[in-house]
Image (cartoon, rainbow over all chains, first blue to last red; front, side, top):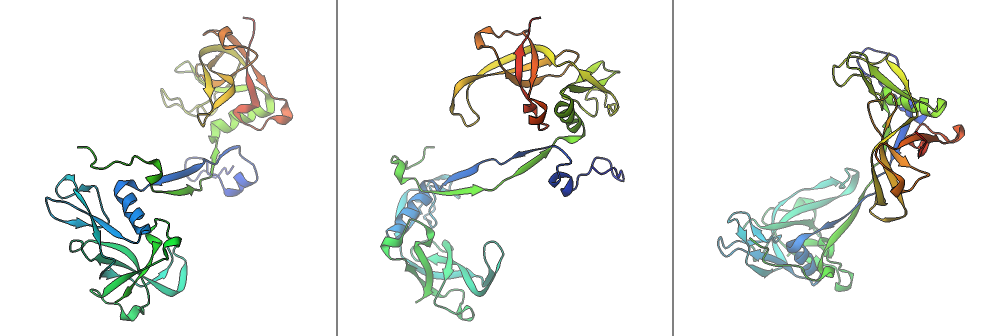
Length: 167
Length: 160
């Protein structure tokens, strides 16, 4: 242990611990989890496996929401009905990304975008990738369509759609 | 307001598995370091005493919790004998799984100390344990001690 008392307290260095100069108790909690998608997203994912995008309608405000939710946050009441939407839409906003989720760098950029789905209310959309398009050709408002994995490769995940391509 | 839909088939539940890697190394603190070194090296219990408050801390504290006096140089040896203040019989382990042999866990007040230690009871059965039962610490052999509370195997009853 260091005896330097410039500050109150007893500072420890990494070597105090790695060289066993101080007693320690090591503890590795088994922090595994299973994260439940919930009723609305659960159904949304199950429908993706069948190759469909579904939303949820609120009869009061008449909004058709995607991703679906079982409760309308504007009307403060349960939503009413499942609606099958198209697998096409428009680019609401997009980004050209040169990093992965963990901030490591990539040469070929990905183009994450919010896609307003046809059949849902204005402004309602899901996040996905754009593909078969050059970054410089992407525009807000551009029409796009889902490119699905073959049915047997789908597993009830958002990645059952590979990407959206211009059409 | 109830949910308009329910999942009745368990296989309909969609979930994502994950694991968060977490590793902790807890240090004992200044007082804890001395307490566990004394346990390991000398097989004895050391507490700290506040003369002002007439209170002996075990586990030791570096400061009196009552008057905030520094107890840095107020170390006292405490007996390894004491009495059971409270006890419980554990039939489940930390994961909630049944244990083969029920465990006796007790709060023990050592002679000369005011604080309490949590530890196991051994060489006895639940039906023979009572509050006030005199007990003594059973230490592991010196070479097996690591500076942990488990350097004490358990407390066993002694004749009062």
